[in-house]
Image 1 (cartoon, rainbow, N blue to C red):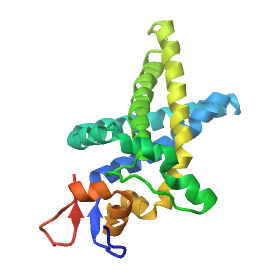
Image 2: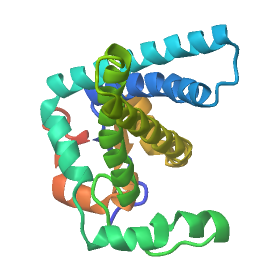
Image 3: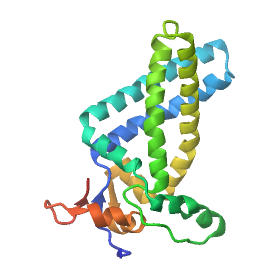
Image 4: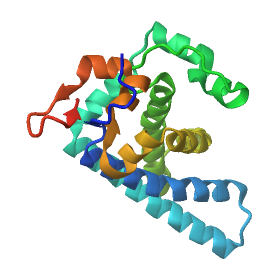
Length: 227
């Protein structure tokens, strides 16, 4: 059982993860905005050209960020993949009540939620979409930018559709992700500022992670960390 006022910090997001997330966020926001403009084409020719240029630059930044993090923190990437693609009966039960969020926001009541690991089932779904969709966006974007006239026409069309669908799915996820990130403000501060969550918050929302993976760090006896 967690202690309600236990404020001991747990390192949930180390510095390299936070830097990767910052660059990912700062590149994807203009990508999503310019992608919608390129889809609907509401601007003049000059405006659309500027939109295209910004889209390309943001795409390059996101691709370099993803490649650099994969190379420099490969172990964390492998662990993240293992986490988000794990599946159990707890995930089925979580999705049956959607994490209890609709009941909390719409009805003002709390329903039982199955215990979660480091990421809840919704975060795992979003993480899987980011991994798959982001990879599709980067690879298809490179082909559409570098060799759209050299590649076979059918392949270019397919990559264009895959690029569009992936972008729309991730853009649709974005406002939900941002809203719930701010709602879970301790987790938001951990990802955006210092990397730490209070023990009581982790024990409430991710009890299996706390139980199975958290270990004391010998440096000061107070800081807690995990894989």
